[in-house]
Length: 140
Image (cartoon, rainbow, N blue to C red):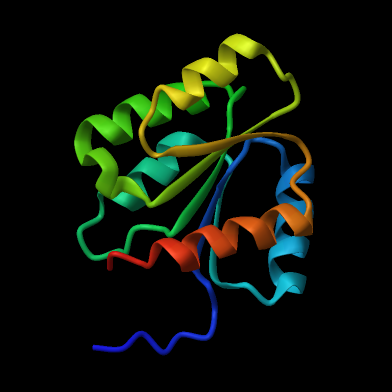
């Protein structure tokens, strides 16, 4: 079955507790023309609930904030990869305001994490990530 969706990123999941950052990412995603479905979560637990639903399709790309109340980005990754392994998502990118080298090392210890970027995400970075998804071929 040939995939005819014109969008390189079928489903982009944004997990970030900052409403301001979420607004910026939404504008970038919508104006880029690269994203078909946009899922936005202020709390990592809610995003995990979506992924656990057997009737939903896992995202092609997750942009994940590290520092969040309740469940932070690393706790989300630990819970999600424990349940789903590499099937969680082809590409996870950690976003942070602090480029702590320890965080970068910890992020890269997860097989699904492809990059560790300083906030805010730019349209050029989103374009580069969409190319990664395209070249790796969707496994859906």
